[in-house]
Figure (spheres, rainbow, N blue to C red):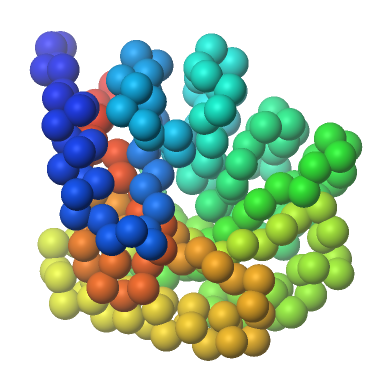
Length: 223
Ligand SMILES: *Cc1c(COP(=O)(O)O)cnc(C)c1O
């Protein structure tokens, strides 16, 4: 199969031009070669997101050490140990059991690992995360229970749909929840919401961090 090489410089510049200054861009490089990351790096991009532990570790090993690596995908407990030494932000803290493991591995490395609590917002059953109620309960005890985890915000994914009304509704619900929790828990600074297909909508609903892959690096083909 032949895939056309994307014009990363052009795509990245275009995306960055549309982002307000307070919105952080995570360039999602999953399935893409290290050379693509190097090209974005040359243009000043320093934050990259991956969703597979093995791929993340392989890339981290060979690429510049000042890259900030974000884990954005479903994280299995038995793989936390591989990313614990270096990961900068885990977007997918999706259960109490996972928090126990991240805290343990962070402690082994004398680190505090930054995490976002993932909210189950979308309709799809396959997507994971806390309900609003469970998240609120988690936030009120996490600092005490998990001293080696620093919760810096929340993450959510919208339903995969072309129905913009639905996406608007979901992001609005998320945004209201985030604001309420921020009043109670001032340590919440980040709302990670928005991907290639819906990031402009997410920004209208107070997103402060967008995770953009295909618009920058081209469509992915899973074999
Ligand atoms: C793949 C992925 C993205 C980026 O998706 P694009 O549609 O390519 O921008 C964002 N967030 C998560 C959690 C992902 O797995």
